[in-house]
Amino acid sequence: MENVNDIYFDGHYKDIWRTLIPAELTPKEAEFMIRYFNLQPGSKVLDIMCGYGRHAIALAKKGVEVTAVDNLPDYINEINETAKKENLSLKAFKADVIQYRTDEKFDLALCMGNSLNFFPPEETQQLLSSISSCLVKNGHLLINTWSLTEIAVKSFKEKAEMNVNGINFLAEAQYLFHPTRIETITVMTSADGTAENKKAIDYIFSVAEIETMLNKAGFVLKEIYSIPERKKFALGEPRAYIIAQKK
Image (cartoon, rainbow, N blue to C red; front, side):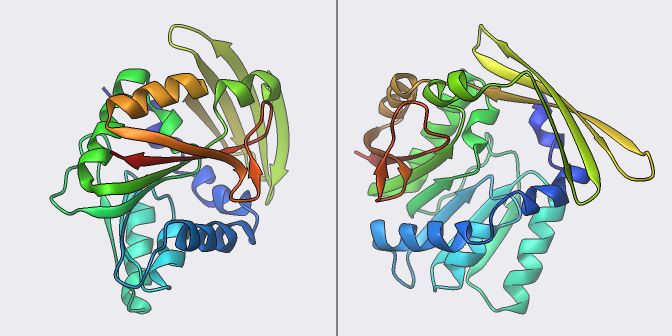
């Protein structure tokens, strides 16, 4: 069954998503990854739901061997063009991440930008198990999310509006249950009046639920930060960086 989030990031949002990420965030996150996980030239990283490749490219520029996977062909083509142009050890594949399989083994897997929360519980469990099978023993998984229960309950807004690069965004959201999720209808209207109407679903998991799924997939939850290595996650923080290690 098609995931509604598969088509959310094309159209207007494909380009707008870049502008919503502060320029200084990517190098800070990449430096944290290199330091915390002791990544060296030749270390192997799997970037699941890589988007336009901000982490994949940043790590590849440090000599890390990166495999990036996403469902959106425009992103994948752009990453491969950058890798070829800059002679990076980076390869990108268009694939349904739930079905993606590889015989390669990685030292670290990334699931950034709230992307783990695009899937209902059973598919999330399947994805975590698949990621685990791709890691070396004692390899790590880094998850970045803002859809933990401990975040979403405090930050949830029924309506939001903003204008980015001349595109007006009007979002209306519902906090729903069984499974717990936030469903958002966003109307994106350009200056010429052209409108795109998109639906997104973010599935909400508590820390305890995430830990249970990680354990079932063969991981141990090691740490949760709100600012990597600087601030431990606490109730109501706006984002979380979850670190798990394969048993």
